[in-house]
Length: 75
Image 1: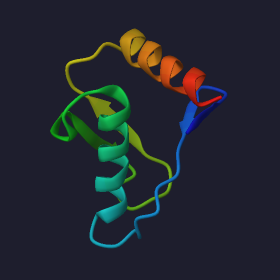
Image 2: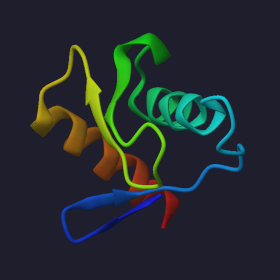
Image 3: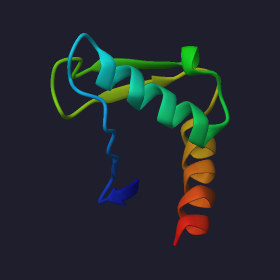
Image 4: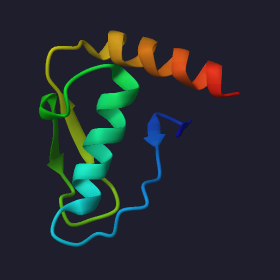
C-alpha cells in the first residue's frame, strides 16, 4: 500500500472473480482505517483494476491522516 501522486495504490491477492477482489479491497481498507468493512463501498470500477471507493463515517482529511500513520509505520 502506498501513494502514487494522489492515488492510493494497493495490492490484494484475491482473484477478480465474483467480486472477491472488491471484497478484499474493502476488507484491507477497513482494517487499515479501523472501520467496519460495511462502511467501504466500491462506487466505480467494480470490474476493473482502478477503483473509486467511498468510506462512510470518515472525512477525507481523517482518511488521509490514518493512512499516513499506517504508511509511516510500514516504512
